Length: 385
Image 1 (spheres, one colour):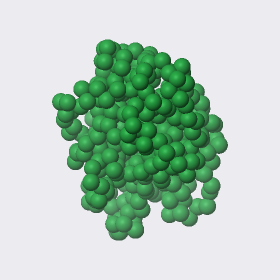
Image 2 (spheres, one colour; image 1 turned 180 degrees about the horizontal axis):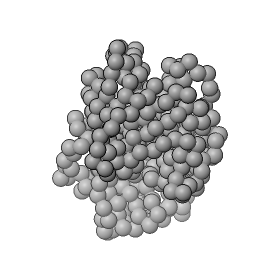
Image 3 (cartoon, helix red, strand yellow; image 1 turned 90 degrees about the horizontal axis):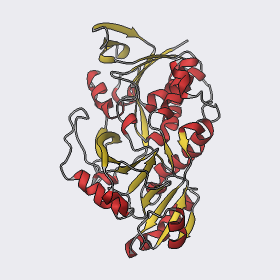
Image 4 (tube, one colour; image 1 turned 60 degrees about the horizontal axis):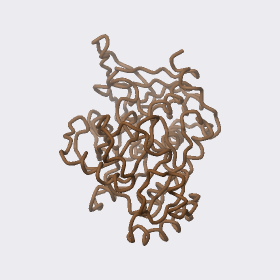
């Protein structure tokens, strides 16, 4: 039985551990901190319908709507299936509506056109002068609980999960990665782990992992600021009906409302300086959709780094695709035994894992179909049993 070592304890690592044990692999996962303490545990909790990307990033949109439907089936308790409204506030938004509807149709994203009166009946906190709205199957997911469903199921099926265990080096022999050096932050000791194949699923930190192995990876960390205000102002996800930008998503999370998000690029996801004007920018932009935001106290402010695939041709960060890719470093860098997965979103974590597990099967000579589209996940509480 091949031993697969996963580096990174976020949502992608969780889904990959689940997928691989179902295909009969021995799996060990190592995370330098607490599980989900990186980007996964810090995003706004939007289960994307794909509408946000339908016009300019249709590949990502199709990935999102497909995975949206799957996650609702396999982990329904981790998702508030509340739908979303894309709202038009001015003539420019209304001009965007035809192409938005057309492209949603091309991406198989269901839509329902609403008048302003209908939208205000559903969500009275919307700006009273809005012009129209479109309903899509967006939803709210729990950023921690959803991946814990994957971890609980993977662990129950034999995966070994190690937190506070940081990969600090790679062992190589004849052009092949054969092991990793681990620093255990709890015991303060180092030890080695051997494996048959190693998967770099470190997200925004994946470039740092590859650097330890002496190779480069085209990952571009893209931090963004989010703000939580101390009231649940809407029951549905609210998005601005325009080209994807900043401050155009409002996500109800239990008794809070999460506002997002901004985007800039950085070289090191461990060194992020919060731009001083971003919180005010988010508050102002989101208040255009829901005016009560201006009168609601801020509960917390944080940021997270997206693991974007580097695209030098993109003139601005928002133009970088939100799709994902996995890399066999034997083909890319002549270094066997190492695979990397970067890009994607929390919504597509299962799909990212499937594509990576498919690659691992090809490399190890296995022909085993993915089972995660239909396999119901254990409840997250099973992880602690």
